[in-house]
Image (cartoon, rainbow, N blue to C red; front, side, top):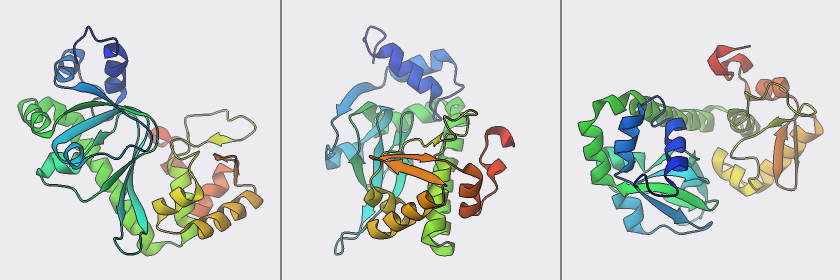
Length: 249
């Protein structure tokens, strides 16, 4: 993308806030932008095998769910949920192999896109980029570690509470009427939430109604908020200060 593009400044601002690039100097980001072109995917778009295998994408707008599905039962589990600033596909970018995963386009999505081999070469030639890239990879690995640990060690309602707590906007110090906003997953169906914690819709529906009855969460018309943050953390079996930015209490 060239500076003359009407989308250039907004795309650059998203990169500057992305965990992949945050803190990098502007000149390096501008050099990086020249490798990418803007792409748009409508909600529900099915990405081709070529788009999944041969290209690396940085999301500018919208959400992408990465799932694995059992070929016989059709049951699915969500391994990652990506939002603005996230990269797809990090695994194929690292090892150059096809990744057996299905991307689900949840919204109208805008991306910066380049060929995987181009991105890999650029990273090799700019080691300073790794100051952001390696911690980002570590965070993606930690998410998988948390998912596998939750599936093995915790019951469904605890996994659900942990999922919601992960996406609570803890930077909001003055929530409206004690309703803490939930990011990225706030409008998900119960079936979609079930796929993120390794369960089924009917079980998640029951647990959400239990949490709502206890005054911990509220949901209506596809909108989820948290009413009692401390009790949600207790249900999740986590200390709340571990989730706050910079360890704040």
